[in-house]
Each structure stands twice: as structure tokens, then as C-alpha cells.
Length: 201
Ligand code: ATP
Image (cartoon, rainbow, N blue to C red; front, side):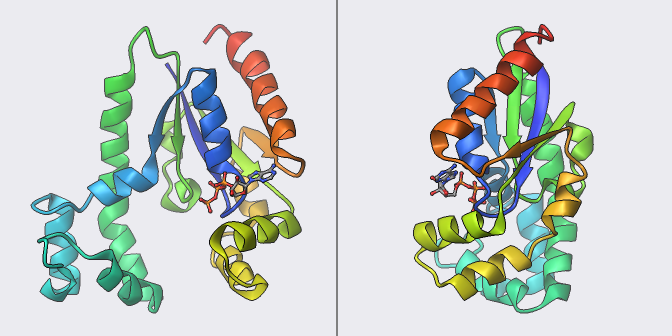
């Protein structure tokens, strides 16, 4: 099974590309969902995060409350580093286990959608890294439209991430998403045909 790691900045079009790859036949893992599962009540991640940030972050349902944890880590880069140092290795292992489970003759291609793939250093999980990129203007418009935020707020989100140049430099494949969704679909289907079907994966 070919293991593709799919990444890109906020609003670049990762989820759209992931959906198109699923439609073409890839099995899919969303690293965000794995991230949430990495600290469910009773897990190793849960215990370590509570030890680091205190029991006040536990909600009434016994789970870590993201609305309580979020402000602690997004207002303080040091806290964010602590959280990442706890959870990233756990998420890495969980994705690896999931990929190994999926790896059979029926599943020829898997795609793991992970916004922080490069920042977290998860490249070794994959045979290929695909990066989705789009011009800043397009990204800002998509975020403003989807998240109903101002241009300044959208820009702030973009600027809190690593630069496109840095992310793109890690890609084996770069998908430029500056046209419409139909154009994106065409690019993805060409990649599927040229890179996956032709290689016999
Ligand atoms: P995030 O990391 O913020 O979740 P993402 O990289 O997964 O974003 P998508 O969710 O795929 O990006 O796209 C962001 C928004 O832009 C969505 O509403 C999507 O429908 C829209 N979009 C993506 N690509 C295009 C395109 N080529 N033309 C028009 N709209 C697009």
C-alpha cells in the first residue's frame, strides 16, 4: 500500500484533495481526529496532559475540555510546545498503527491528511509527501468565506503557521490550488493516473 502524507496550510485545500483521493479509491485518515483521540479519558495522552496542565482542564464529562485547554496553549508558545511534545509522538504511533491495519491487498493507496505533518516531523510515516498550496489572496478569501472572519483574523491564522516555502520544500508532489474546484479535481485525477496507476501501486 502506498502511503501518502497530505499537508498544506490553512485553507489551502487539503480536505478537498483528500476527499477527491477518497473518491478515487484511497483509504483515508484525518490526523485531526487521531489528535482528538490521543487524549481521551484514561489514555496515556490524557494522563500526561492533565499532569502538565492540571485537573481544571477536565470537563464535566470527564474528558479534557478543548475550550479550557485551548486558551492555555494558544496564549503561550511554551505551553503549546509542552502539549505538542506530549501528543505528537502519541499521534505518530496511532497513525502508524492505523496504517499498518489498513495495509492489505485491497487497499492500494492510503492518504493521511495532516496540517502539521512537517512541523511535527511525521515524514517517516510516508512513502510520499503531497503538499497543497495556494496564493495568499485565495487562501484569505476561502478562510474569510468559510470561517466568517475578517481579513486580519484570516491573515493572523496563516501567519501562525510555517511558511508555504518551507512546507513546499518538503513535498514530493506540489498541488497548486489556485483555480476552481473542477480544476483541482483535474489535477488530482491526473496525479492519480500518472503517479499511482502508472506506477502499478
Ligand atoms: P483547513 O486546514 O483550514 O481545514 P484545508 O486546507 O483542509 O483547510 P479545504 O477545507 O479543502 O482546505 O478548503 C478550504 C475552503 O476553501 C473550503 O470551504 C473549500 O470548499 C474551499 N476551496 C478549496 N479549494 C477551492 C477551490 N479551488 N475553489 C474554490 N473553493 C475552494
